[in-house]
Image 1 (cartoon, rainbow, N blue to C red):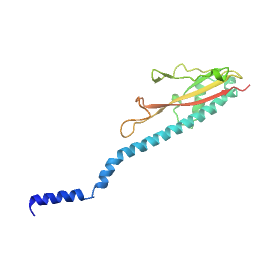
Image 2: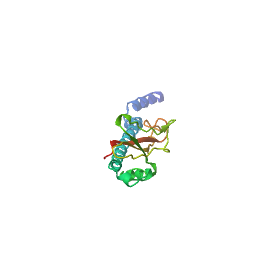
Image 3: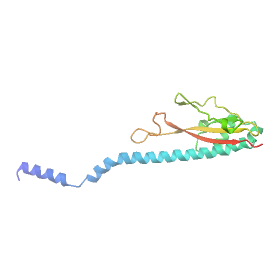
Image 4: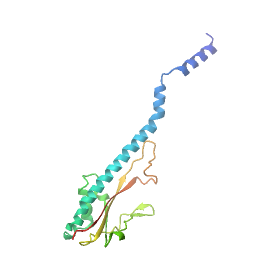
Length: 176
């Protein structure tokens, strides 16, 4: 066989060969597939953390609603520790921040916003457990850490702060 014909024959054989096609296809599909799995797992974890925080907030807020927090002169730090104790160890206690506001009627209720200039500010949060018959709004904030996916970006954290702010909320009227 002449060398030119042999080269053409081997090139044709290479193009028609299916060996290694699976590896190439896997190399093309694997990064987006792994990134999608990472996003699904991280989203599920954030939803789980949100539900745990909501449940812990409701359990701790019951202390305010029944007047137990007021009779014990509970401080904001003690309330935050109570939320942490109810969270099954999922959160770092130092990262939980509570805002408790008192209103006279439900139409007056406004939510506390800890975001200033695009950043979470944990200082100066109100803590007023109120008196019997008062309307209370309890909000507990936690900055849930978010890790970039295998492609180096994170859809849930477009500003690159490294965390999602999750909030547990309870609104109720204190018992008489």
